[in-house]
Image 1 (cartoon, rainbow, N blue to C red):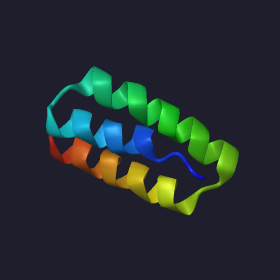
Image 2: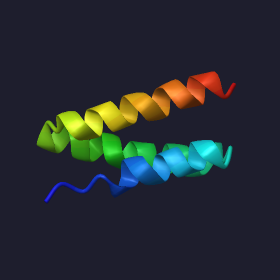
Image 3: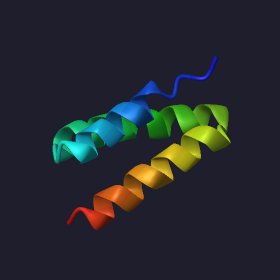
Image 4: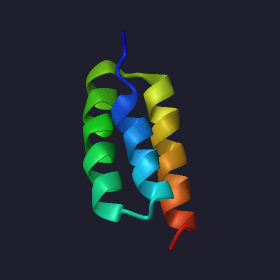
Length: 56
């Protein structure tokens, strides 16, 4: 089963406005997405990115 938890945790960091936390888990999620080619994980990361850019 695909592990989407890092992307979800990255979003938690964005919501909490904890940039280091968000980036740590986004990096893990990105690595998994690259290894697996997961579209779901890629979409979650795009949402994280959009929220981070909107939070600035």
